[in-house]
Image (cartoon, rainbow, N blue to C red):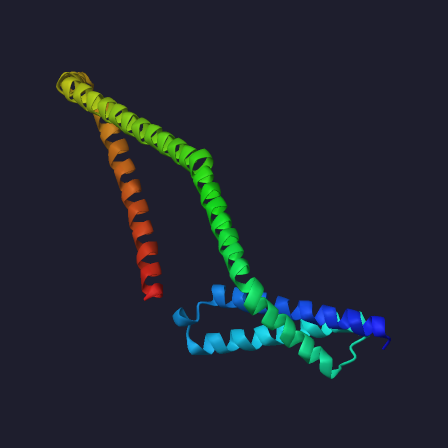
Length: 210
């Protein structure tokens, strides 16, 4: 490597050491080890270290084609130490401000969604449901009123109509009466046969399903 390449590599590794320190603090801020199970912390730690190693090696590969030298480790330690002594406090404050800002923006978006979308839709749905229920009750009340009116009319007209039919029946000649009785008996017998036929079919299906 040329001197310029070595110089750029050293500066880059110092920057990567500081980046690693910031990434480590960010990782611990979101992981919250105390509230996690040990196996979850272990898996996250392994993934974090693998990711950081890959990032550092990738940057090193870009700078000097991945050539490892002893001073690279010294540069990483220097960058990490510089971060711990100079940048950690301001970075953590900035990180907390960014997190608080994101949380505030998210809460604002949620409140805006609740006010402009959720609550109007809920009110509209409640209004439509109330109208449907009231309409259903009104229709049911109307049908019950019509049914009661029809029952009252039938009860009111039953006796006069029955008396008229009985009087009309008495006035009919005996021959017509006999024909009507034969027709009635024939129809009754026909309906009894149909009822018996369907009863046998139903009993047959019940036996097969047992």
